[in-house]
Every structure is written in C-alpha cells, then in structure tokens.
Image (tube, rainbow, N blue to C red; front, side, top):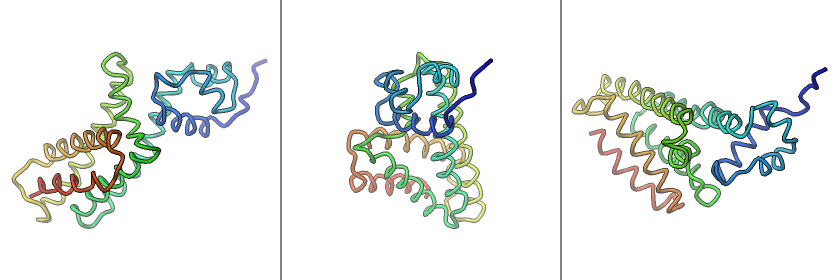
Length: 192
C-alpha cells in the first residue's frame, strides 16, 4: 500500500523557491533541500522526481506568484509610464533583498543555460509572456497617445524586458535600489 504524502507540496515548493533563489541551483544540495523543507529524501523524490523537478516547480511557482503580480500591476496602471516605472522599480526592490539575490528566473538563465534545455524553455516562455504582456499595454498606450508611435510596441517591450534582465543582474552586483532606480528613468525615455 502506497503511503500518503505527509507534507504540503505547495508550501514545500515555496520554501524550495526561496532556497534556490538565495543559493542557486548548483550550490543547493538535496540534503540542503530536505533539511530546509523538513522532509525525507524519499519524499522529495516521490513528490518531485528529484532536485531538477523541484527546481522546475520552484521556477513555475515564481512565475505564478511574483512575476504574475508584476504583470497584473502593469495592466491595472492607468498611466503607462507610471505603471512601467513602478513595475521596474518594484522588481529591483525584490531583487536587492537578501543582499542582492537577484531574480530567480534571470539567475536560472545565468546559471543553467545553455546546458539545461528544460530550464531554457521555461525561462524563454516566461520572458515571452512578459514581453507579450508589456507589448499589449504599450499598444493600448500608443492608441491613447500616452507614448510616441516611433517604436513598434513589440520591439519596445522586448527592449524593456532585456533592460530589466540586465538591471536584475546589476542588482546582484550593486544591491542598492537608490543606485539602480535612476537607470529606470533613462530606460523610460525610450517611451518617447
């Protein structure tokens, strides 16, 4: 008879996300995970198939919580410049927490690519979703006359996602919101 799972997998994924975010994939051992989550190694493998499966679940959890919240805030903003500024600065604030832990997704790209094809696909899908959501917001902003028509909304959104990725890497080097926030103002000049 199979044993029933005796731990909350959603809570375990959330806690694992924090550990991977703080330490990275390579520096986090299965022993670290089981100790941090308070579960046995057999339970980890039964629930997630191993460290890789738990890492992917943690990336997905990050996407559905933090990344999704940033995009919702963007869609709810009345003024596109203010909404984008708020989204970028908030992402930097989150990234500098914990002495510059950065962004879990950007960290995954820097640490796991190009070798890990599954992580590449996950990161690319998340980046594409961010770009597409931004492009939709920018398209509406162009129609309302809030921003200049000189750039294609899709290209402008791709620039902003690329800028944010670089900013999040910089947040690991310089974990200081006051030092990075002025860069957001420079990026906003691209809106025209």
